[in-house]
Image (cartoon, rainbow, N blue to C red; front, top):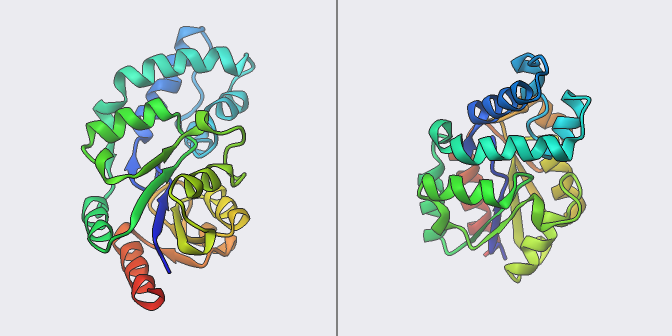
Length: 217
């Protein structure tokens, strides 16, 4: 029986690329370091923030994260938007009686700010951010904590994400995965990770989920 759908956040439900890039620029400017090119920043986006900073700067990533987050929390709402088809998908999944949760490597505070601003927080029964777990994706902890909160077994859930971090976490958690090519990996890159499903957008992901509801319930 399918009862719960978990989602990644960045690149899956929302596009916050511009907010992320500008906060990285601010962090580099604040310490007088030359800015990296935009492509280098975007290549790190799906990783936890401190991992991103360590890859881009030769400075203490914990200290740099404080600078980044202060700017991001103050400005992220200005340039973040829902990806196409998200609200319609959430409506349909709720109407189908499914529980919905988010398992993200973004901080809980950043996630809460954006979900509230975009007026979709109330759709979700659970939110697990990077600061709620010891190990971030591709470790399965965020998914496993979500399942526990929602009283769901792994074979009763699906996870929707846009990167190899998501597909690996789902596999390690024993959860069926839908790779959606709306974020930071191409369809070909997602297919190489061999999730159970690869789709082009959230509307197609919704169809896969609803078909699974009909087949399994």
